[in-house]
Length: 105
Length: 117
Image (cartoon, rainbow over the protein chains, first blue to last red):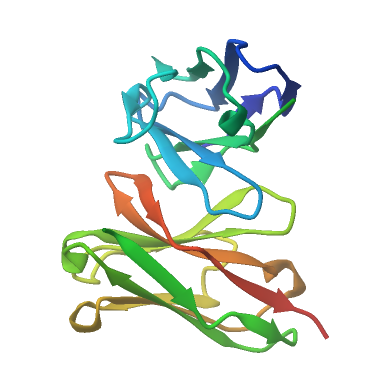
């Protein structure tokens, strides 16, 4: 199975900060990489698909980049509603998720 | 709008069985792969199984292969997960998701399965 390693596992940030989360795959996955946001007690929601495509309804302050093994999710200006846990997921082969990154105040 | 409503979770003893259901609405159900994903308390996400639109292509994670069975009834726009030989480590919230090109673009609210003696 393809392993996904997210870093950091948690981070502290303030409203207005630029935040970057990375996801590294154990082998090349082209751009078969998706990002999700999960708030406490809620189901995850899809933010980005195919590494850099914004899901409908997701604010443009979210962006994604990367291909091959290294990917990033960037929040250009952190908003109060963005404090959550973020997961990457690959769909190149048997679907797997990264361990998550908790964004805290 | 797309809605996925899971049911069937609860408390079961180790070795027991449970059947989860997911009622879908708001989209052409038979056109989509569907999956089950779970999340143990305080842990990350684990994809368990997917099934294609006509039910003929099915895949399982190694952790549940041989114990869990995914199925669907397109006439009832419903997805199912039969879980047998349950273990304590199967305790989790189980989500029904719609799969769009490998991305889970819609999720149910989740149903909690607790395996404990």
